[in-house]
Length: 276
Image (cartoon, rainbow, N blue to C red; front, side, top):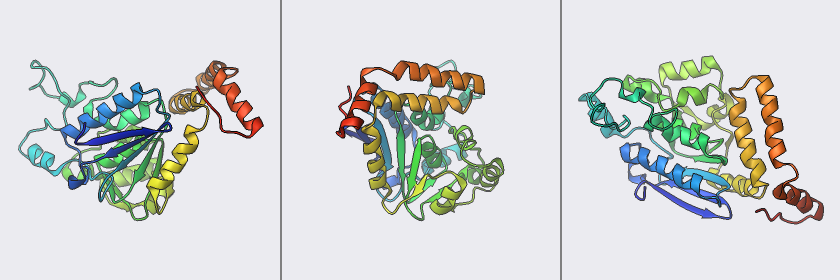
């Protein structure tokens, strides 16, 4: 992970950066592995309450590494396929193998941010193209610099968006909008992306804005924030009866507990909360 992603944690906020800046943070097999490893590290750290995800250099992420397309043109798809054992490595349909829960490795590079138990805020600048767009769509919130270029670019290379993008986009934008962008691969910028639903806010300094929001979230009851993420994730797929029950179940697990009591006392006494 060390040559692809950096992680630092301060006051509950994890600063996670793609650091392959010489390649505009393009996705190669090592980057996929690094993103997934970063997710494992963050999930295992109880000090993490919020994650800010960004890219160093000129861009958030330019998508799949150009060298990978050259390999594909020669019939080698190993760079995007999940690792398999000797009995399956040469078989057809390797991408259909589930290697990370419900996903394969490239899909999990985007889905891991959705599965983290804490909120993830993506800071975008330069470009977020193809797989890079799908990676940031896994975040809970996306702030983008003016003019940031985005594209569901896979059709340019004769491919479909297959890094969890279809499952993430369908909750953000209208179906016809997603179809138009997928079929054409056209580039759109941050301002349009906000109107369509892909970007939460356009900011002159999205990284600073992301940290400001992250620090505020980190100051709230961490039990409630984690439950909020669970509830909001699940509500996308549950029917009304199960969704209402989940609200009650999660509230039962929080109300009256020490952190919830501390949240009330801190508000009443006008002081910062001290959560466990």
